[in-house]
Length: 300
Image 1 (tube, helix red, strand yellow):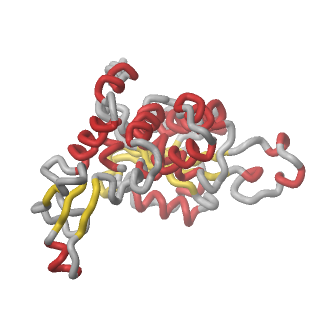
Image 2: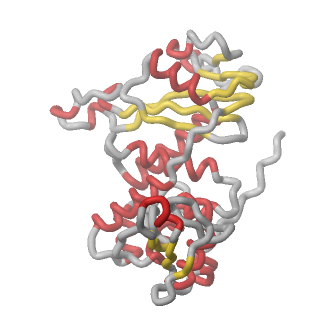
């Protein structure tokens, strides 16, 4: 029997409070994460920048004067999700920490309550900006790869009559397709519909040339992917594992995501579904990363 991987302990609330006691500490941390090799100009990437003496955490680049005809003054939050915000950096850090340490996610309403924000819209907007920062570039998957599709949304018979005809999947649900490399990373994408053309386009984009096995269920949308060594299981016949062929890993990811949608967020609109998918994908792909918080701040 395969050994379960050791759990990776993330930063606790007490550790967060000790690491970020004030706004100054947050600013120093952001500078180090953004520019580990020293501050550089975000426009021309010139490393010879000068601190503005009267304005902490601001720098002047004179190289931009040669390029654009004027010098460029910038702050530590320029080109980040924290730019032009009226909330302290420490609040942003705290919300990010809460989102990343909640396996099934945390709702904007709960964020509002815990942070003491005056409006739900403030918490909602901050959470969505953080989710945008968590969007990862899609890297191709290799080895044994499982592919499966799912649909997110309430049951048709539980909806109001006028909403039962909404397009977007069975019963108006939102279709999502995903691929996961065994013991590796997952890539999930929201689609307008799941047909042969869209499913096969997704698979060809996310699979590398060194795939040793493409494991799917009996769905016919994958039938033309003959360039990959494909194995299938027939769920309709209650067949779930045939040797190395199964889709249990990707279905495990769907389970985590659906528990978050149903148990935490209760409902998610199709408009914002890609952002919620990005959040859960980021957490899953960084499940063995002991510094998931730092990775997220670096991406912000």
